[in-house]
Image (spheres, rainbow, N blue to C red):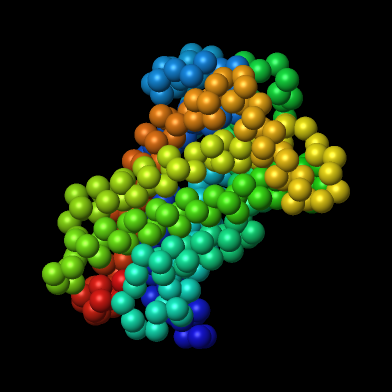
Length: 312
């Protein structure tokens, strides 16, 4: 068990996943800015992604679509490192050399996701607030914040709202571990199908396409919960009164979903989906492409050739 947990192979996958995700997110970061505004600012009209970005640039300046880039990249790097490391460690422990299956991929993805959420949620809470700081909202109920950086945001949140506020949105985040779990299950299943004849390296186009398909399905299925997650992390949806944190979380999620549906119709809970799909599908596809290339190059340098392909 210890050899799987502390294996060099798992470290290679973790570093490759972190590097791939950071590069991909940097390229498509403005699309994520448009998505987050549509999710959090209920009074902003749901326009096309280019129109939303044009409004943001006109109202807030040319660099506004990249506001909050650094904390997002820090959070994403840590989050994907933890996820990829746990995913491959757990998978190696479960399989012990046996061929993988879709059910194994899903179970491993869920377990890795739970660990990732519990460890990195405070980083995502801080980065959500920093990214939205200074934005010109169309909703007058949103209070402005004034954080000078990541550490100051941590300090202010703990001082003003308590340590527990750093885990705002944890419950929907735990439900949302299905997103990467479904994504990895579909991605690994399609990869095995393409390599069913003989173990081989997939082409760049194949990796890009199956990465995009996997992310498109997982994002569409879980998008309403992603919207609630963003609202809770922003920390301006009111304070729950129930003593039970689980009951409170369930009531909050239900209340936010119902209120959004009443205000904007059933399609309101999917507000920003176009921007999210455009951003997340392209980002995930590029991330998987870079991840596979980095892993392949690293193992080739290590002299393993194609032997690592048989384990995946």
